[in-house]
Length: 204
Image (cartoon, rainbow, N blue to C red; front, side, top):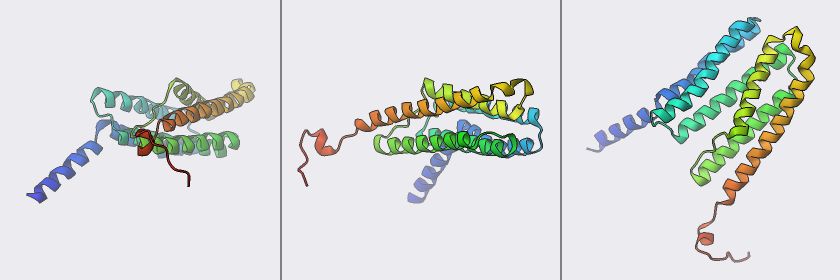
């Protein structure tokens, strides 16, 4: 019967959404308010402990998605979206509470938004999602170290603040230009049907 078929399809769709990797991704959103609250209360070690749990789940969801054969474009989008929300919220909080330069926070957030938008464009036109390459992973690790640095604000490391800020700034620019190159390469493969058939489009 059609009703049973529709019900079965809806259950299958829900099963694809409610997976262990996706739940791990969403768990980072649940932990985010806890991180922000601990930062606001100057409980830095506790905040870093919860951050560490978030970062572990970030690596674990991708591993389990591959191990359990649950890699989907939706899961990739969810993972990237949660990462951008988490990073943006923490950086904005550090701007207000830990003197993180506003320019750095704004540059990271703008970079992440542009990369996420570009990835969605590629997925829509090419049917695939762009995963982070080595440079992207290095930049992500550097962002995590930036968060740790400004969360702890150790007096012994304050002399390195300028070097930290400049290093992050360079990585923001280089990693974004690298992604632009990837984006143009992927989109350059896109051809209209008439182009694929070897026909020229008339000038209009």
